[in-house]
Length: 393
Image (cartoon, rainbow, N blue to C red):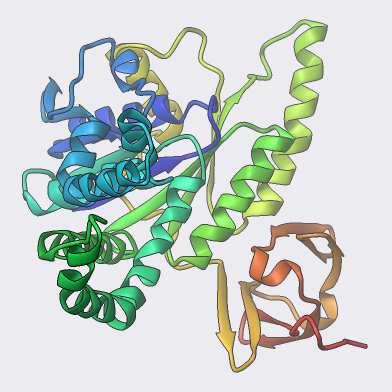
């Protein structure tokens, strides 16, 4: 079983890449399903067929599903949402507004992603391809299981006990809706499902995230930021796909300017994501719609390679807390500390080694700290970030 998640900024072509990958996997004999968790689905447009909220066969050994967010919300959040609507209505909100306000940010995306657990446990598929929403926010939300586990073991039992003891008293003096056992059981079940999903998607032998981008400055920066948070939360990224590169055979002065720009930013992609492999995909000569064009794109991406293989094992960036300080560990083989030069600008750390330069977007927890020391452990450079109040010389 392999689970492949494709994410990237809106408009970079990740849905086409996910669809092409799914079709290649099916052609190789894998029982495959491609799932869209994007609220604005475009998977059906890529295949030029109708795809609904239940898996439907769209090619031999290939099924597709555009997840119905409302259905998933009712499935995973129904009981809790109904209670929240009751509370908000009790506070005087219009029923329609209360119903809308009860959907907390990220709930719909998480409900969609929980479908992955169901598909995995069904044992009906060898490969699950996920066309994620066009933003790193979806994957950053996957950090919630760690918070949820703390809540479940520390706070949840207290809240449940308080509700059980104080509930009858509250009901006797007010009509405030008090959560009952069904609400608490739903919350508990949801948190356990989130934890199951987290373990599934952080299993590096089973799941991989793949970043799709175009060689453009803003797109690359967002992909860098997403990659940093994927590493922070323990998700394995094994491939970067640089899409829509104008072929060198294309002439015209107008396109020469674009090709020059793409070449410059192509080097930035290589510097920013090394040692991850980077697959370069040319701009197709026609709209990528339908099986024929998707197969053509799959060949352009993977050549003769199997898309389900693990293209890079391990994490090139590891962020951890040691004692009172944070460390950033980078794999830099064949390099010594004397070869490394670092410059800092805001939340961006630039590491230069000879003609090689790597730009790293720091997460918020490190952005406000200075690098206190640097050392090598084997082929890994370990940077220690001081607490904000500690002044470094």
